[in-house]
Figure 1 (cartoon, helix red, strand yellow):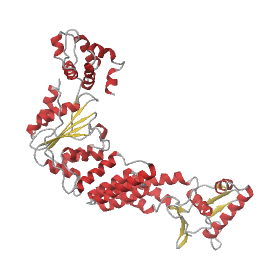
Figure 2 (cartoon, helix red, strand yellow):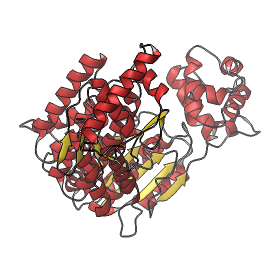
Figure 3 (cartoon, one colour):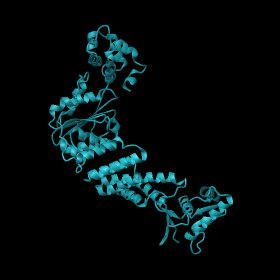
Figure 4 (cartoon, one colour):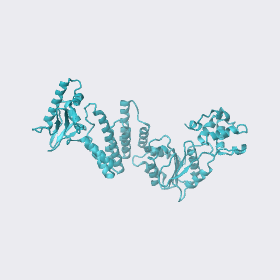
Length: 498
């Protein structure tokens, strides 16, 4: 004999062969079937069911209500003398036949299969998840046990829909990816991850107006339901799409534009010589070099100086991409487009747009403050280097990117003073940096025999870290070196770099 299948997602219904039961005498009868189906492996005490569905009734009335509800269910699930085939009831417990199936169990099985599968098999399992999810668990039912389970299933479905969207996109099925992303947005209307995926897909399938409609609907829902606005990454994506709709693209700024740096660099001659040697255009040049070191060690300043010295050797663009405020690796492309003076194209992927702008001439891209984007952002760098064979990337980061062929230059603090006379002290790079920055703050500042011991001790206390030295030197406008030294806290370096 065929067993019943209970649909709990969307509309509650029971099916067996050609039989369909979708209408129940009352909400509580329907809720009782749903609870027994969702927990059919357990025999439930009658007292527990009475307390759950008729908490305000006297014991005798509660027992009668449960008996009536079970009789009504038997009439629908055990017609024609099939007593005991669907409902297993004793004087103490009630249970739905464990052989009964539910769409929720099928959904969980599909999710488990997707987690184990790869490639096309994974896409098929994820598509099965979307097929099974007819809507939220037991829509219109509000028993206490339903809400947390409904939220868990909705979250699992949304993740699966987004994963399928990305998998279909990677497989070249952008329209299928759009459909999956739409399901994710419908499941989590206030979810920004789903909205961004759908916006990006619309933009790359030549539908930027549809992408902006998604953004507008998200903004309206967030304002109405939560009293907030979309996050910075979502707004940034919307702005990039708006730019692509403009009939006139922004004028490309000079490809050799680098941030202006007015301060001299000290004590990095060996590192600069190595960077110039490795990054200068040649058949054997390094294509990915990462400057590593702790915060404040001078990675950005060194990278800028190296890029400026290498400008004349590059016929192609030499550009600086600031990533300090980028926390999502999906927006590295936007920052790179902006640095190169480009607008996002709805007809070409950002990596292809950047590679086309670089062309065949030797080019150099400085990617600054990359550490918070590792490892996800490493794929951007790898993909760009694969597409633009004339490009080299100079990256500043607190850790390596982990890409094959990557060279690392680890920066140490500047050399610190030892014992010596005033002339020897004035030649030490860390001291020179402190004096230079102190003069910028107070033009009359000078290294003298009187303040030399305090300057030397101050530089040693700050361990030769350039940023800490520069910040301390900024106080020279109102304090002497001795006073600056006296005011350093117990852990001066950590405090200054905080």
